[in-house]
Length: 222
Image 1 (tube, rainbow, N blue to C red):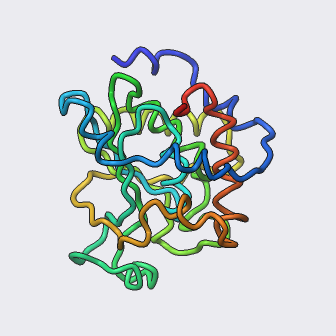
Image 2 (image 1 turned 135 degrees about the vertical axis):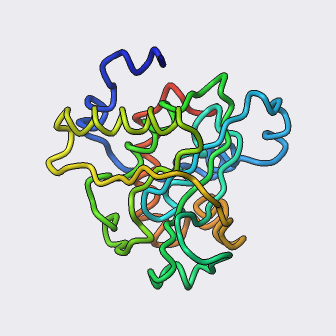
């Protein structure tokens, strides 16, 4: 049994925090970019993978890149019914895919509960098929589990968080078996770090990044 799951869930307190907004500096953005050299520096036996969707993948990618122990973050699509979907198709909502990120992390620094705590902080899991002004099934809240253990942990955390009353509405996050991940087009990768001056990044992504940094200040990359 995961010892962390036997303790009171820290998310309840974190979600009540009053947090401000600020965009990270260029130096900060450069320092949090995950790359293949970082991935290659960790033996394969210490690497685990998680796949989650919490709205626009530009937002979730930028937040997860901050965490110490995250080796690589890739934006893409999962959960649909056609092969190799294009962004335009996914945006039409006809392929069944969700915008997701696939995270490879060092399991000596992070465990799956850490990954899911970040997931629930990174978006509003009580919004059905939307996050803010991003509306459609492609923006749904979803966890694609890679093992029975991941399914157990995800279900337990969702149930505990729901029971805690942290949200005024029930959590609508889907928990479903992972099948396939299709990487998004190259221009979507590392989007916030490369396009931080764009209006969407400044007014939507940056506030989420700043909130995330405050909540997880003890788990950030240096």
